[in-house]
Length: 80
Ligand SMILES: [Zn+2]
Image: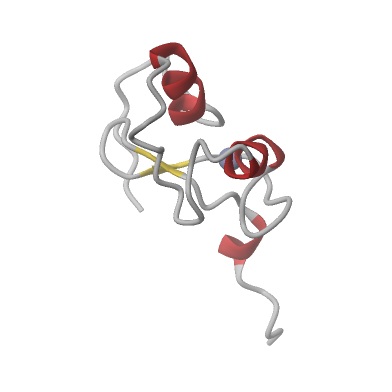
């Protein structure tokens, strides 16, 4: 068995508030985030835990960050 076989380390750790617990489906790029969310981290729009900065007042940008990498076209609830 490989010590590096964990699947979750290769996927973005950003968790959206959409529908409970959904993770961004993009592959991890740096620090556990995909390229998009890592860029948001560098810009201070989210913190290292993937929480959107409360001072980010642009609602369109918040939605863009929150819904990046997930499917929002249906109501399917995904667990785990
Ligand atoms: Zn991501």
